[in-house]
Image (tube, rainbow, N blue to C red):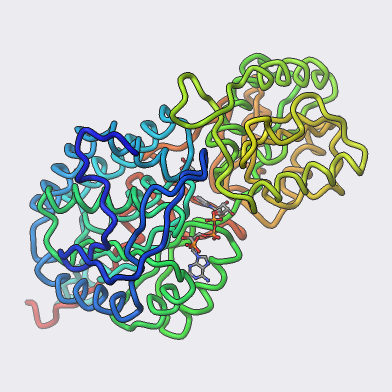
Length: 484
Ligand SMILES: NC(=O)C1=CN([C@@H]2O[C@H](COP(=O)(O)OP(=O)(O)OC[C@H]3O[C@@H](n4cnc5c(N)ncnc54)[C@H](OP(=O)(O)O)[C@@H]3O)[C@@H](O)[C@H]2O)C=CC1
Ligand SMILES: O=C(O)[C@H](O)CS(=O)(=O)O
């Protein structure tokens, strides 16, 4: 049983229009480290989802009429409550998702940083005054909230992916209907408990828990009271939602799949590059969209980098996310494990060589040994598919042009990383990489102060930073005539 300082944070009812809802229908939530059931969560019907949308639509006028300062104050209170309860929120997150407790705490604080950031930005949603085009004309541009936002988020960051969306939405005056992944609804519900305590008015932030993501997605896309869909997840599902949303011309923000290249040039600090690769590849057991999916190492430093990386990876501590000192937890489910094994067996069959790891961990379940594999070639599955697991595939290259060509040889374009101490090379490569984000001599780029998002088939829109509110705003232009 989960031991919490505040057991009321382990909520299993859906939160709709300020009411905690039980329908009698539930779906189970399991701990991926142990396989044990940790809760039965309300399984809403589509009529309940539609009711949540109605409530958000009814609430948007009053919420939008508050000043930015008033909305910001409520968001700031929410931030303070999240920080005060970080230990319980992290325990709930580790229990339902499996990541090590230290990483879970990091995620809670990372998600909270977006709520803090947009609590401040709420007061700064400025419009424009444009010089008139005729003597009697005066032109003013307003920025107004888009309205009701439907949100669908993945299991791998069950707190931060919602926080990264709900914060800007509420800051600018939108209302928000969140549907968390079936695998990890508890973190979202705990956010709703604290949001209610912070004074978020009923209807402004609802959490609709459901085992039928497809049906919820169809309702959010078809319901004309929903102005916008914001989605984080696979490119496959993003395309489904974009197609479904087209029927009602839904605005969309899409944070989708990745296939990040991680390039080590021969002028790099190799020890620093190893540290960067450990973070970029193995954070969340490799289950992040910005993970290094392909590691390209220039031939002159390939042996040194490979050996140093393998040595560090072999020292990882695998186990239950609650375990003391554990640095790599389980994969989320059997399907994730099967994908990791398929990518690895494909690579080995095509000539790759194991440097460390390479098999299911002796703990059983969905634990997999963190793995380094060398001798990778572009005809291997890992080159073109997102592994979403703890495998570091090392490819060798000779020239800078070759590295850039290999890095860009993907339909994805979310994150890219490289290590080099040649300033001219840094600018050349950074400008040529076809990604929305580039880490230069660092393997960790996610922060609320910068615009997070991808290009190509990794999505559209940006989350966080001074740009992050734009996805939740409409421009309205007013032309005043007869002014003389
Ligand atoms: N760009 C980014 O910031 C991020 C991208 N991702 C990407 O997400 C993937 C991993 O997450 P994963 O959960 O497996 O991704 P999925 O796309 O399978 O699921 C993401 C969310 O979409 C829901 N969903 C699934 N099918 C549909 C549908 N037909 N209609 C509406 N909603 C649906 C899921 O619900 P349910 O699971 O309950 O069915 C889940 O809540 C990877 O590709 C990763 O790169 C992940 C995190 C961040
Ligand atoms: O992969 C994800 O779900 C997150 O976007 C990763 S990050 O924002 O924590 O880097």
